[in-house]
Length: 485
Ligand code: CS2
Image 1 (cartoon, rainbow, N blue to C red):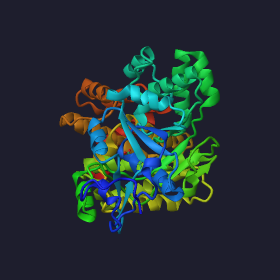
Image 2: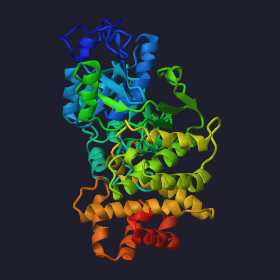
Image 3: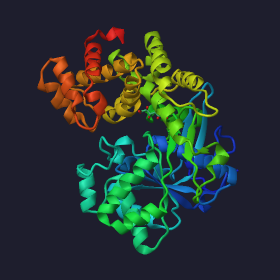
Image 4: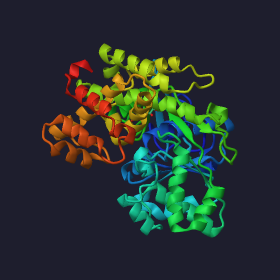
């Protein structure tokens, strides 16, 4: 029985830690003795559902240790106070045929960059911090179309000029590493956990590019001392809703104002690395030299289908993944897309049957308890579509394979943009301004609008930008009735 937190009052999250009858997994170690060894940048629901849960399982198995987490949010003070009011504890609701619940104790501290930069930098400098992990979304890497650090981005320009006042993840990492370099503290290692191919490698090159401008000696030191393994992360985690809070109250009898909800399935694949780190392999994390193959399969199958569902589903009037996949036309479309246009682009993974993997993912989408908003997935298409859809499309074209369904997804994305612009719906995308200019320049002339769209820098690969067949196919699908999608 867990005794670390004193009972505060009846029916609070802390009080259940000493309640033997509550029907949920509780921390099996003394939180008071738990040291902080990980700083996580980007304290969204995904981190709390995924990496923090793997770490929690390990802490439970080992009975504690020094791999507690300091969660860093860039600006979410509301989440910080919600978590602090409950001693940084939160519940993870796992929604499956039978729901299950787990209270996570491994999150020990929550900091906000906007208001507590000094403290964040102190944590990064502290020698007990061995690992800095990140979930800052694809756009948080501040990369341009060539995958290099975008030195023209306003935030990067700011951070380069104010290295001690960083506001981007890249700036923070370099500032943290620079302080260690200056003060002779050994480097921490960095684990990127966002949906980008070669996420660790890309992050490393962005950090080195930034550091090189600040000080070539620093860049050299990082190059020699800091590891950035590539990873693949997977766990469907819809945003926390009031219904998540109600579910926990109804089932467990206490109010958690900052819970997370997720599916049962969870996978984490990390490039083999031998630096000081939690032994996550003991709780099912896969360490391999072959992350890229897992990553591509997941990005093109799961995330690719997600984006297809998002744009096609929204145009058909659906709100969630579950609703969209329940439409037999959409499901048939997806199966065809995967079998004929995605699987042929993937290398086989040892021990992983890609056909079965794709069917298992569809079954995950068919979980009626997971209400994953299509609008959440539709965000940031300018960064997601190139990886999930345009990359396999370009490969198929140059190999002379079919691209019909992938073209439909591109057309649906453009129709979604046009639909938002026409109906004054905000588009959450760093390139929203470019979309607006493009679609308004030539009125209703679809061909000209699409041609113009293709020239927006950094989105469409050059091999497709100049490909007349690709552009005319997109125009054709764009103009066809939405019912054919
Ligand atoms: C989704 C992902 O929002 C999105 O773009 O495709 O967040 C997806 O749910 C996760 O990658 C699942 O692991």
